[in-house]
Length: 228
Picture: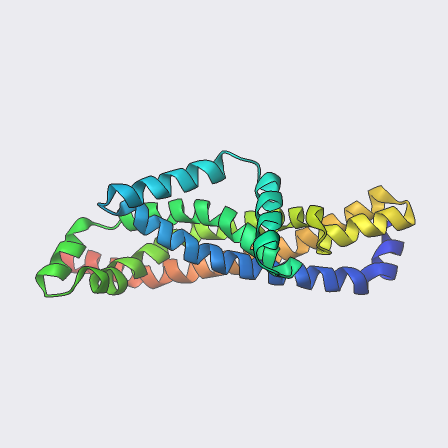
């Protein structure tokens, strides 16, 4: 029964779930850094930087994640001695960075160009105007898409099990091989993933709601001024 596996193996699965969450958090944090850099390459006037970003995004989006993890994992391990955790996190960061780059690029380009021009006319440098004026608004607009990508990243992290890491899915594979109850074990693993993603989705929705609430008074004030 599923309940038997839940009760007998929960310490093992809780530990594996914590490892999965840490791996996902580190990978997505690194992926955001990579994505932001590639997004700047994409909107840069430099053809070389645009070409580099285009090739990177094309290769990542055009090849399976499991292939990327295997190539990056074994490639990194041949060059530098890294733990499975860090090798897996870097591989996932490289993958997620391509998708996060497009999210950031779209969010940055959605900001009215007049705001950058007005900032430059006030004496701000381009980097300063980008940091103080454009990026805060772009991050706000990117929150829904980033939330979806983070959820996808959490589920995709299960693929590191195939390079030997004992995350939640890797632990589930090991348990199923030892107890010969594959269906029930996999359903328990799915339940753990469902709980984690449901909790994360709740917090993302709360964050979106707070950001939307923060914009409401300004809109209302503008409507009142027009009515007056």
